[in-house]
Image 1 (cartoon, one colour):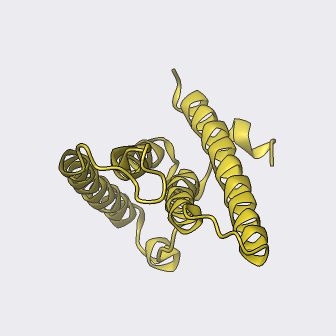
Image 2 (cartoon, rainbow, N blue to C red):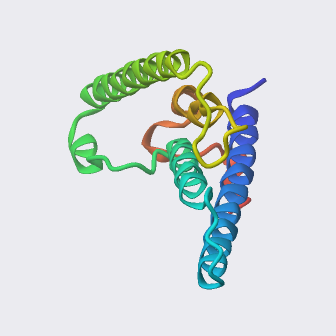
Length: 162
């Protein structure tokens, strides 16, 4: 699969996941408010809303990584010569990948610790399921970093869709 095809596939998948998560969070919050106003608070509302917000943050960050839309110092890179720019880009990519490999490893360790633990508000939902976003999100961020283009440019095929 070409990098452009992988970029496009990852973008579509992440956009759909983020859309579902945003919609779910809105529905959960509105339901929580309505039930609370009716005097019948939902016991699971706070816990599930927090989990969906975390998932939205992780997957949204991966989506932003595809376009290198995270905070950076573009003027520093522009001021550097072409040789230094390549070195800085390689250093940047190496540090990001190393960091998210560490996050994925730590997330995997968290999943091992949570073996057999269930959510408080929804005791039939394993805590490992909710926390799986840590290693999965970290690995997706690495993939997004690898298929994104230097300077935040997206593959030509994606520019027509915007």
